[in-house]
Image (cartoon, rainbow, N blue to C red; front, side, top):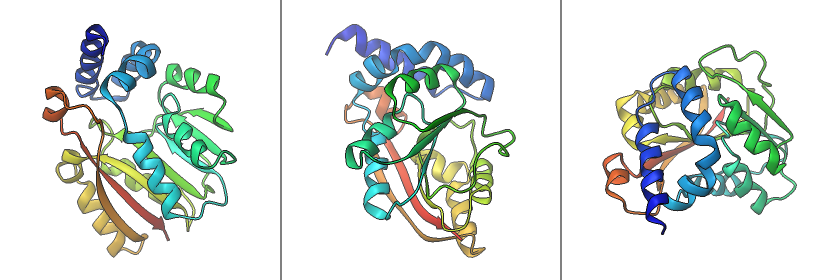
Length: 219
């Protein structure tokens, strides 16, 4: 591995874990976007999108459009399309710069610039499935946002949502999902663990190289 690329990728990762607000994310990813695929993904072995995509496509019969929450540069869509090249996918992200890169890949039917902390009324409700990898990671999106998304989408929407391993318990996601199940807002809930990167850099380990991947159906 090119050592400069590795060091750059680790610096990018360190910066990502310090994000606190929506504005922080917009500014950060403006600089991050041009380096995301070639430096960050390749240098650190970012396998998270593939793991989440495989779980979605193997767990559910998808016969309609998929909404990719926090789509970034389109890594999840790339993996879905490898499994089913006819899949119809819309992407949502807070970063216009990341969306511009996604557009060049021609993976998505539609792409939307949207802050999940804001108004969701412009986001369609009638997706067959919702998927997310790397969005509930840095702490600026809490469990309240996930509840709002569950309440937003239509009945029988399948969901595969990746959540940072530490945040899953510490930020209230575990309790939220238990509550949603007890409220009969979701069903068929399960959670599995996945590595986020296949590289074993110290910084990655310090930030927990694990995610909880949650699957459920909205009812």
